[in-house]
Length: 330
Image (cartoon, rainbow, N blue to C red; front, side, top):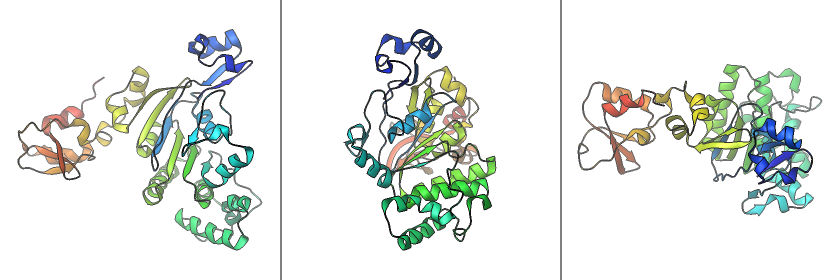
């Protein structure tokens, strides 16, 4: 996908000028390339996090997925259907039933009770009031706000208001949820609680989520896959451990240099092949076990740890591998 702002924006797409730094492109053409030739796939039930600094293009990108912004060029497919080819009615139906969005600034209606804010999407769908109220109460309980339905937004804290925004997004039972920096305005402790809430909901409800953030710690905590964005482009896409262990360039390395590797890297990332040696006995761990949890196993024993993927032996880890993982190498 491409998103270019300015005169004759379509001429920038795939042109030599598109490779210019943003400042030079603006000076030469009067255009700004907010998103440049970005492609990605998100699997059902996956949490795909796009992380980057302000101005990197991440919010523009996510708003093209449901056509709040139309791309200058490119295609968006949801379950094999081309969103760009949809009629106005088909697009409205997509937004009502399949895709929901959680914004940074809540967007609650101040004159409506919490239960009615949550039910707003259902109201647009034409759901009868009794059913709207019932479903609103259900999702308010899911996000920890049972009993708050008759209050108004200004009676709630910032964190509680964001929970209402999350409940509103869940009320229509969408398959895909888009999050545009939803927690960046919250205090750190409330932000952590909301991150935990998203992980809990994901474990229970298995929604497909695309989450935008400028916070690497948040990206590592929430993402199954992380895309690092800079100047409208993806510079690296990978699992949290791939991004931390193998940064694609100095830009990504600078982002990840202060990350506690022991809390991100897993046994799978540091294991070596079995090769028939040292795997006959000893403790076993799952391949997803983080290095932090391996430290105690290797601290007082020389035995090799067997790494399992399900019931399959996929590698081995020893004290040297764990200690090496704790040393940052760039």
